[in-house]
Image (cartoon, rainbow, N blue to C red; front, top):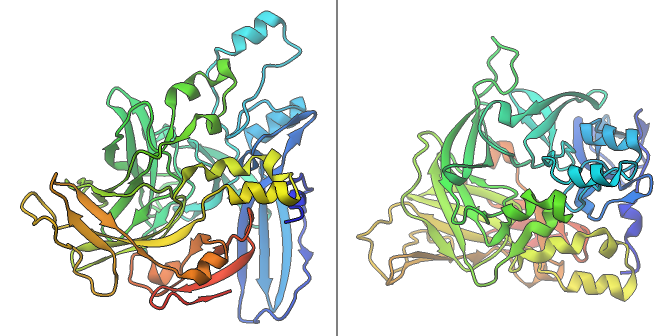
Amino acid sequence: MKCIAPLFQTVEETPLPVPTQISGTVPEWIKGNLLRNGPGKFEFGKDKYNHWFDGMALLHKFTIENGCVTYMSKFLESDSYKKNSSENRIVVSEFGTTAMPDPCKSIFQRFLSRFETLIPTDNGNINFVQYQNDYYVSTETNVMHKVDLDLLRTQEKVDWSKYIAVNGATAHPHYDPDGTSYNMGNSYGRQGTLYNIIKVPAKNHTTEDKLQGVEIVCSIPAKSTLKPSYYHSFGMTENYIIFVEQPLTINILKILTSKMSGASIADALSWDPRDETVFHVANKHTGELHPVTFHTKLFATFHQINAFEDQDCIVFDICCQDDGRTVNAYKLQNLHKSGQALDQVYNSGSRSLPRRFVLPLNTNSSTRQDKNLNPLIYTTATVIKTVDGKIECTPENLYDTALEEQGGLDFPNIHYSKYNTKKYRYFYGCGFQHLVGSSLIKVDILTKEIWV
């Protein structure tokens, strides 16, 4: 590819709605707002960010009505954004960039600043999320911001740790039809590192408190206290939460010493090709952790497609990469390359491809060995109990060569309000014939047919 650098440069916000140019026709019955956010500013003064994920959050709104579309955007007025703007330099560390001490301080003051507590960013540049009828923008720390959707105005800051003992939460919660929300977040303490399942009940109209009634329903101990798994999302069925513990891990000691070493969160991520991937299942109503874990050949995942229950099994569809180091490709120094150098970055990464796993919930110590435990005739996924008692899962590929030719698929979506936690046939995603999305794709799970 010739060049994609213009996609990763600072842009101006568009605070008032402007009409867009439309190719084709937008059906007049479509009415609503499409909300998105992502990085939109990559430097302050002479300081530049190192990674695409570091950029300051820019909120986007497309308003669709009567066959017309208008667009507006505003920067999230986070503490990180305001502090950086005030000092005209990077003051708050982000995923791939560690803030350096103020050069105007004395040598002794700069030395002491390296021992200060690392302040988590509130730069909510990943996703719009909804809790109790309120809309927020979120990253993966413990802080998110409520947003007024009419004007994209930044409102109050909400800190998860003021309500429950977590150090962060994903930007990809799940929702039940009654408005109950589920999420996951880590905690670090005397009990070691825990992956916590968070429940936010539906809106209680008798109180104005944010996140009223939020609770931790289950805690899953990490395999390694000092190197827990990184996760970006999780799976949910009508009754269960599925957590994927993958060998893409976070070195906690590196993060704790980052102010002294200058290492970023990205530097603390590591991929262990000798390890495996493990599925944990918890009852989201009772908090009971299923006694059996399900093992499979290692892969990394960032986004799940859907999950549902059938014949005492969980069917879990996710986008998988055979190598978890792809995140390094999105350093800005790579994205600013062109021609063959840019192609080499793309070719060095692993493609994201959809796979289906079956997790039988009726397995126990008396389950027979070396027999396929999958009773579902519509999927070729297999489940075997090995001689050492482990439950080994082999997935069905939800694709053929046509999808591989599109560079795989990620950012999957379904008709969420109709098919979330239910058996379904179609999903949608973004094709990646290069480092950035190159197409929109519809996939038929049954036939593996795709439409681009």
